[in-house]
Image (tube, rainbow, N blue to C red):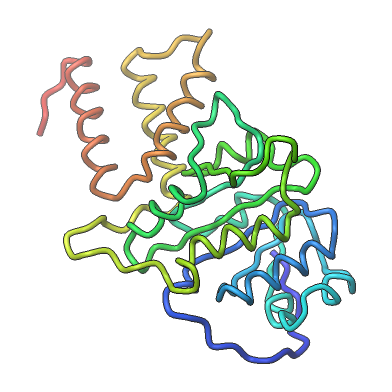
Length: 257
């Protein structure tokens, strides 16, 4: 990971609750769009910008940022999307294309779901390249996939516009998402812990004889996708692991301690 040295910029006191969000732009082509996205972040109270596939910012990004220089100065650079997701709990990906293999929700529904998580939940908002968007593999890394409604004749929003619309909706039209009531959701596992849990679940299912050489890759990927969309907590993981472990012991004729 590379981090650009700060070059000044006015300080900003962000509204409470929005510093848990990270805006992740994957392989953006246009520095102007990066600047517009940063401007949208400043307008709506977000501050954590992560850039995938870039090593530095070019001057045009600062020209379109307009009073959002500080966000660009603090932007962090990553070689791959998984690296940029480190430390996050929930990952939400934007796509303009309707795909049968990836269940989609509207932006409003995605924002509603995010508001249900505990305030300490770290959330990543992922946006793809202006022309090609996110790859199927990159979208598959997310917990929630959303689209922004648009007129049928227009293929997609400008990247900077899409980021701003999404952030405005998530911020609750200028206010931070409400804290969940007591007894609400537990803090999810981090994204990396969810990936590791999916891998372990797959291995245990393989041990139960659920997979064959002809379907192992397909089943493994489907299991990972299911558990990503479940956004597991530590308690969820432990219960599922215990159930699978009991099944393995029973299959092998072992006794449970």
